[in-house]
Length: 102
Length: 102
Image 1 (cartoon, chains in turn brown, cyan):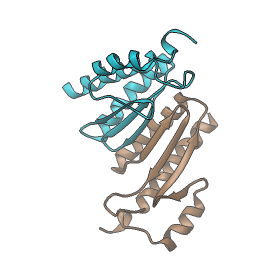
Image 2: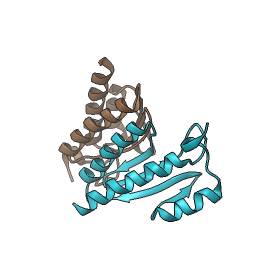
Image 3: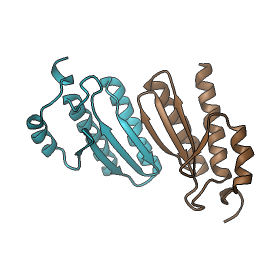
Image 4: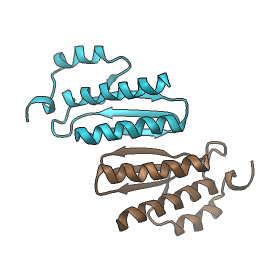
């Protein structure tokens, strides 16, 4: 295993995490909770993110209830957080930002 | 509150639950875990179910990781399981059955 699916060290994670506002590490996964205006917006976000995740062959763990979406990203092969998780988190941020701008 | 959004008694729940294979009561919610063949199938199921849920104005709590979808249904107004939850569960069963038939 090498490259984007290699486990990141704590020293590698720290600056990447600092660059991603509103994300944290929880249970060794990259975590964020989004709150949208409605179920339609929340599921719209999930649909866009699902297409991106499938195209990356890198899938989230996520929970939705009404307008809330809770996300945990980790890389099963590496059993930890990798660059793939940060890449997917960045793409999710871009999708959510577009929705927020309406 | 009355009708389909009224809390069901244990005696009312019992036969309805027996009619729904693979569903159980967990933490006072109507619960099922589906396993699909892939993320695309799992998210396809969720997308169909999301449209139904929105049209019913009755939304699930659900968790997805790869091909697994875990669902918990309850009615916030009634703080318990109602006929709406059984109606949504039946619709989810029909969606999943169609996917399984390909």
